[in-house]
Length: 119
Image (cartoon, rainbow, N blue to C red; front, side, top):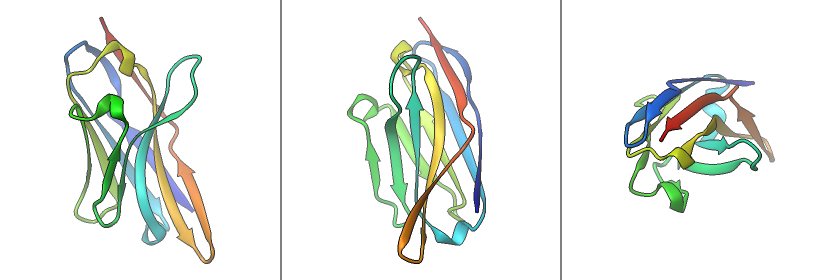
């Protein structure tokens, strides 16, 4: 019941920056956390950054100090500011939302947005 729409991906040179955005709609009142995952070609999907409704954040070691996850005032959108990009950051980036409903926890996923960092 949550729809996630990502934007902001593209092609950048190494050392450049991109800002990804994810807009949530639907049953957004049930969301307890949102985050960003990425999947590079031939590799498994991995967590990049996450943020709870209370503002607690978590980052992969590989992006600490370079990426920042933010939420807007209404907590229905999240952004991922990516600085000092490296070719190793090239991947499809997916927005994720964790929704609490009754006794269950449910994951929602965006369609993914391509980030390519040229060397």
